[in-house]
Length: 137
Image (cartoon, rainbow, N blue to C red):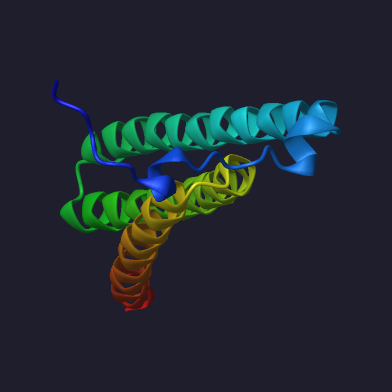
């Protein structure tokens, strides 16, 4: 006896977009491209981390304090470059995923991700600039 009130807007079914219905192979190709981009971004981040650890260890084994500090700062700059490159590729991948999903929630999520990653990139770039200035002195 508990009937729900009629709500026409809840019964709305969104039509499947042309890209997903007629050109499903294009959608699949873009999904693969986005997945490969994610993997490449992670690989770049891991390569940067591995190079940082190796360079950091090498710098720490130096007996001279000034050489050690200079070496660590150089490695920080290099790691920052890898992080920025990885973040940029992750943003590209997120844009592709959002374009394929066509959902408003995904668009909002993408906006938040781009803002967060852009802020991280901005502050990381500022920090790298400061470290580069220290290295020049």
